[in-house]
Image 1 (cartoon, each protein chain N blue to C red):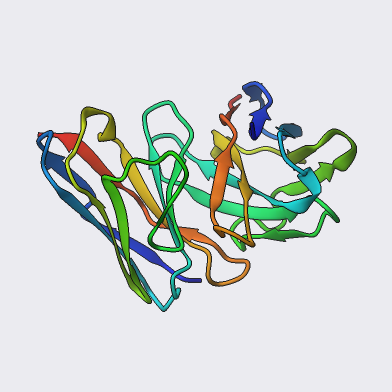
Image 2: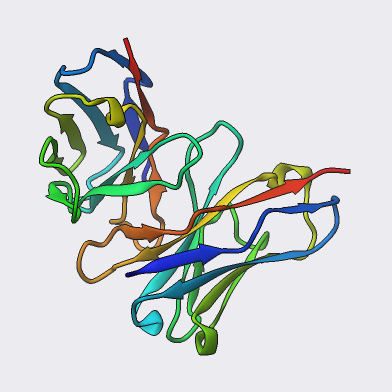
Length: 108
Length: 120
């Protein structure tokens, strides 16, 4: 099983700041990586697939990068609606998909 | 519009059985896989497995193999997750999600979640 490790567990950020969340895979997942956003009481929402492709209707301030074992999600200028928990997920090792444990982005 | 609408919250006692549903609309149901994801209270997301709506080919995470059963009814575009004997540790929110294997590869649409509470 591929283990996905996200860091940090919590990020305290002020609105308007640029933030970068990290996700590391225990072995290569090529570009088969997605990022999801989850707000309290809501279902997760797809932000990024194939490591760097934004989902439809997702703001351009969200960008994904990386391949192999190291990935990043960058939010260029944090808005109030971006405070949430972010999960990465690999879908490389068929059919054993795994999620990272999540990074909570909170207001500083 | 693509929608996945899940059944309402359920409360059961340990040892009881349960089947929850996920009704799809707005797309060709047989053309996609449906995934099930568990979220225990205050915790992260756990992938339970997937089922192909066209032929009911189901794949389970080792952590959930033998503990749950997936099924689909193509005639009503609905996927199901069932337990034969619930435990208190099954208390969680369960999400269904559509997986677009051929394009994004990711879970592009999610149900609203079904809260399952198992308590004596």
